[in-house]
Length: 524
Image (cartoon, rainbow, N blue to C red):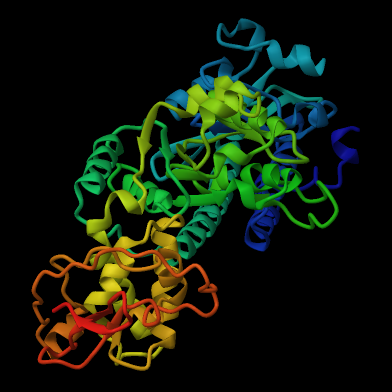
């Protein structure tokens, strides 16, 4: 096509450029799809500057790679997704220096990288490259290659291409802000779902918290080990909150709650059309947690195939969305947790040895509640305060001494979570201001009888303390007796087994027990 055949050739280049810039601006304002924006800019730049090809290359700062995100020309489709080291070639120089460059003949330029030409089978003769700059950072490069049927590129072309590069930078910045808002929104939802802070002051708990605080300042991978309900997620949140990543997202995922086919999509995200129901691109947890912390709960329950994929992400710090081709870098701190014995799982072949050692950088063993019984009164107080307010049961202000003795005598196989659920049920069922043994019938049935009541007193919430003074009681002891052999689970109760509250001089009555002949015997 000659210059006179081109309908735009009779107009000044400035008018053509202005029209193209307006079209590119319209695309930027009309969509948050970054790929669409960059493709439009590459297309308009090639048309205005009469180039055989044009491309937009973005910098993946985490992996130090330059990635082709948009390309037009005969080899354009072949280049999409291609990447090379950020320091290579003329594009690498522009990213490093942050200044545009005009290269009339690439054969004469020592920094020209011919690897892309070899892959695309395209011959580059001359080019102009301009940086995408925003907020003092270079995000990438816009290039136009080989002037069509005419003189070589000139300085005027450099100025025009820099304007296109500035538009591309605006598009990138808008897309980044949009992605950051989505991540922040997700993170805020996660924070909103956060449970109460870790409660307790036992030696076993203090030891765990000290380990969490020490490892928080590092970037080490943490493996939290412990039974169900011991507070592994709360410990993970503490590590994140004490770390330099505290202002970035904390993203949690329960690996055991998702089928294998969905877990990969949740972790790595997926592209539109990747599978039935994937109507739009979705960011995975690795992307949502970028710069922050990813908590992988129940890591011991993932399938062998998922273990392989996870190991690759942990090793390479990069992944590909399901249904996609683009490699995405990620900067996340990994905290994993499990209630399984991973060493035994390795011996049986259920868990990969290499993945175990990748996760087991800084293991922390969380104690079960039965090993820190002294924390139970404070936990009960915390739960009563919360549930009384949430459920409109503000008259419930604490738990009496017999209930507390019962709760401390129980072994709590479900740990803190089981205690929390038991207190919730008791608060809902209570008709008085203090929770008693009758509000914990299932626990009482399993314990059989409270064995020790030494040094116990009524546990009150802060509001309860303001309403009344907690009554100090003398040390008492109940010798444990086995439950009658003919007592069924449904018919047995604390009062029937000899544990009752009678009236007496204290606000909560005497503790009484039935002796061997069935007569009431005062114990306090």
